[in-house]
Image (cartoon, rainbow, N blue to C red; front, side, top):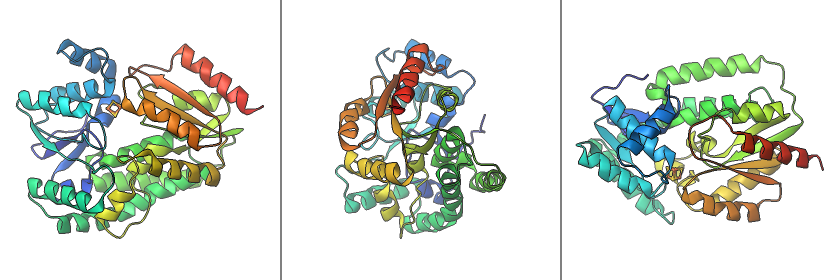
Length: 330
Ligand code: SF4
């Protein structure tokens, strides 16, 4: 369990973490803490016990219960650009005495509005965009290391899909300690470079938000299909070099429309030689509607996997994935 201090700020989604670091705050991605907790299902049940509906996304409920369990006093919530459920979540948290701070990505994408949002966050936390730019330069090294781990996944076949997922998804808050995260990532990169290449018959891309179920990557590898592209996790790591914060967060495809995502996915399909795509959708999530747009835009087979609670991959999903991988042979 990560230590929670007076400077800890919980995050409901990826925000310009450079601003928090410039303000001397410790970022804590509540999604990651929830899903890696000892019993995430119990956290969901706790939120339901406190009035969250059954037919509400389990991530929202897990975030709520995590904030309460850890005694977090400040939370940055992203509604526009992540999830409208966050509006209600933040209202509930505020009603319980927690300081809530909004950060909204512009829709449609607009760099002037984005700059104003980043400036607004910086002012609220008592820092400036200039100070955050300095932190951005400081993070360039660890972001390059993460890009190296990603390349070792698809170019050199030396990193497993789940390892790639864990390293990239953790970059939303760098585990609360950038120097430690950077050191561990560098050590992992060195260790992975020395490995023999992994051999798998099929190369898959994983689309959508990180899975709430466990065992997905290992199950696919048992089917001789390895994930060599984790769409959103890679986006969280901000893999492309940018001139400044505005360019960096404008290039981030997660908060805007599907057009940027489709361009990113198409590039990955070609570059990473993907045989198929697994699109994960969370039960009760608006992103499920976008499944159709992704299917229409790419020309490799896609299987859509829906899951509700943080549980091991179930029998029905396993059967569907088996059928999908078998179909790649034909
Ligand atoms: S999975 Fe969908 S509904 Fe759940 S928090 Fe994320 S965006 Fe919102």
